[in-house]
Each structure stands twice: as structure tokens, then as C-alpha cells.
Amino acid sequence: MSAPSRGVAWRSPSPRRSLRWLLGAVVVAAVLWSLAGTGVGLGSLIEGRAGAAQLISGLFPPDLDADLLSRVFTAAVETLQMSVAALLLGAVIGLPLAVVMAGNVQAPRWLGAAARTVATLLRSVHELLWALLFVATVGLGPAAGVYAISLHSAGVLAKLCSEQLEAVDPGPVEAMRLTGGSRFTTALLGIIPQARAHLASQVLYQWECNIRSSVVIGFVGAGGIGQALGIALHLFRYQELATLVASVVILVIGVDRISKVFRSRLGAASGRAGGGTPHPHRSFFGRSVR
Image (cartoon, rainbow, N blue to C red):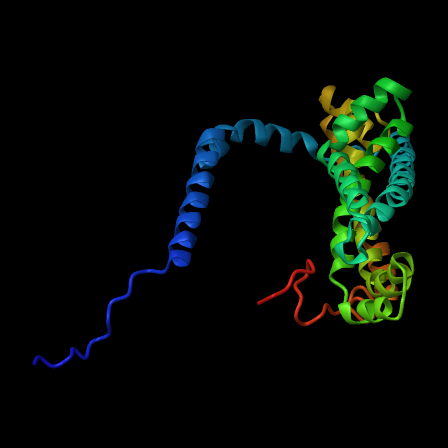
């Protein structure tokens, strides 16, 4: 009788590992296909070097005329007003949707499905398209921009905040339910307080996004710095464009600093407040980790 072989027996790759390799190959092929189809690469950048050099040289030195700076300041204030007003309206719409969408709130199934559908619709339509619709409805100006940004931000806040609500520690939530707490009471006293710091952080970050969105939608006449940027770009006033771009950067940095102060006060920056540390057996999005 022959002695059994002492080598390690060959094992065929598991189906799960084969599937991972297949998915990886599909992702790589999709990325290469997309890059080739869109013409992205070093060659296109080299071909556009002459235009880039002309644009960059035209931006310097920025126009610092007193009359222009006064108009830029007015446009920056209008952009800030648009971002705050859109944040308020977006939060009023988006946060209730987030509560209804959160799985641990256990809202009626039909109500949760309706909230998810509304949130998906709101964030699927870009702010620029919303702005075009509202410009056609209410006319040119910042009001159209506020309505456009608020609807899109409501959908984004509903999505992100519902995930924050689902990521809280389930222990206190289950304890409240076992003691007879209703859905509303459990959400109000057991879920939202744990996530309040991260909810505030999401809302403040959306404020920064609203600043950038207000710049984009201004190109279609929805007010703010974006409208002035569009005019300067169409008229090839590159030095004026440089001043406007610098004002946008300064505005975003200022809003970021203010948001950081508020987040640290609420404990969101270090996770000190409730909801700062997710449950050890749950992922960031509230699903079980095995």
C-alpha cells in the first residue's frame, strides 16, 4: 500500500473569492472604458495647454477696483443669505423625512417608502435643473436659487441623517420599546438625542455645500456671486473673474471655520456628545458587522 502524500492538498478557489476577482476585473474594465470613452488623459491636457496658459495669464493681477469690490461684497452677502435660507428650508423638509426613513424608528412601511421616494426624487434632480425650473416659475433672482438649493439639500439631508439615526446604540432604543414607549417617544427621546451631534454636523456641512451650489446656479440667473461670475466669464473679464473666485474661496473658508466652531461646541468633532461612538457591533450605516 502506498504511503499517503505529505504535501498540502490543492484546493480549488472558493466561489466567493472567484466572485471578488470577477467583480474587481469588471470594475477595472469599467474605469478603463470610461476613461477611454471620455478622452481623459495626459494627451488632452497637453493639447489644451495653450488655452490654459492664456486663461491663467488673464487672471493676474486680479481687479481690485473699489467699485468692483463693492459689487463683489454685495454679491457675497447675497450668496450667504441664499445659503442660510436654503439650509433652513432644506432642514425643515429633510430632517422629518430622515426620521421617517430611519429603519430603527419603525415608521409604517407605506410612510417610510413614501419618504424615501420623495427624498430620492429631491436629491436626484441637480440644483441647476431645479434652478432652471424656478427661474422659469418665479423669475430671475436669489429666490429661485433658494428654492432650488433647498429642495436638493432636503433630499441629501434626508439620506445622510437617516443613516446617522440608524447608527445609534440600539440598547436604549430597545429598552424604551420594552417599557411601552411609542414610535414617536422612542424616536424623540431614544434615537435623536444619541445622534444629535452628528445630525448637526451633517446640517452644517450642507451649509458649506449650499455656498458652492449657489455659485453654480448663479450662472442661470439665480442670483449671488455665481451670476456675477457668469457675466464676467461670458465677457472675458478674467481679472474680474479672479476677484470673484477669490471671494468665493474666502466665503467658503469662513463658513468652514464657523461650522467647525459649532461642531466642536456640539461635540461632533470629537464624538463626545451622544451618538459620537457607534455601537461596537454595528457599522457606520447601522448594519450588522460580522
